[in-house]
Image (cartoon, rainbow, N blue to C red):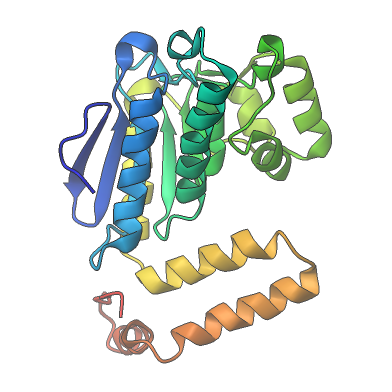
Length: 264
């Protein structure tokens, strides 16, 4: 994980919390090949680190857009082989984001189109600013969502709503995104980041192993039957029984104090 990124900013506003900002505001934070490489490096570094943040927030620079999706100026004139080569990098980045061992919250501070909406959907959940517009516009460009959108949107909003959104390419607002389960809450511009950081901070205070196993049970369980999902839940649960954090949590409860979780 490099500290010298050019297209993203990273900072730690509070202990255990990593804030990642997509930093190409002049092009509405559209992602190019360099941004995909840097994000892939970031997620890979976090996954391999001995000491990880306990929660990650991802947002966009400039306040106008969260992310406008792929940089179509960079793609203009690309040969088929170049396009496919670039898309492999995009695929790996999104796979690494979905597989993150740390919860990721999207702070959608502006418009999210195409791959920008897929960013939102690849995160664990999202809060959005009122007035944000969202869309998966790929079919209007002769392509289709290719960063998980056909799968993540259907899981968030249901099959029929996902088909309507994807097949029309029609933009919709934050209020509709909230109603359809795409975002969890909407806020005024000055209230968005405080709300996201407050939620993230609450997650950082919980036992990191318990958070990780609970996320795994939810995410992986949805891809299987209820019976298999419940077996997975017990498998994840049993991993926590021998941990120091489990013992600390019970001890702190009985001693009427705040637990001190270490992730062990």
